[in-house]
Image (cartoon, rainbow, N blue to C red; front, top):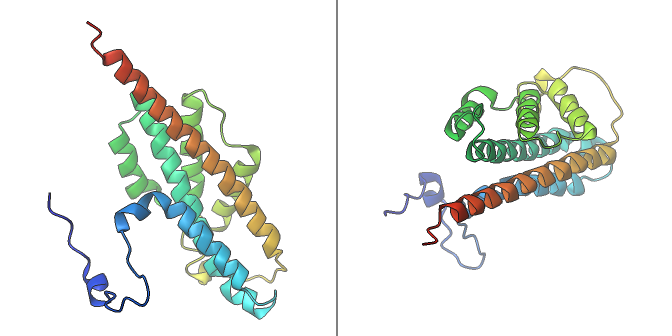
Length: 206
């Protein structure tokens, strides 16, 4: 099978001086997207110089980056729960491909809807829904940024003055992220176990 062509932008800026290791294997990054954006948000947060104008300057990039991390994590959990429903012979479960299309075309960056779809799948699987704390925090994010663009274009945010406790906000992001990570990992393990069991049942013991 032919390898995909390197994008033009990366070819133009290809590293030809080996004094810095700028080699990336893009396919390997896909599964780590949520963690990569979460780490980027924390690096931005830790780079602020005090809590004055500098923190204000990088506030939106921090919020946008961490929001993207949680969105990616939500979508991964939704896909894992969708696959588990299908492979568990749930007659009411849409095909995984249909769920993926819905994520890309309809739900996109809509936090409240993404949260609700994940909770619906968890309940259909007879698992516990997201915690009250996670549901509440995701709801607050959705209220502030319903389109997924408010942290990209500040004009979509209300023009108000607020004294923000940024460390406490980051801790709330971390708590929600940690909870969602646990949910995603549990679902992935269940998918693997379901497939192992189906493979076991399909073996020929004669």
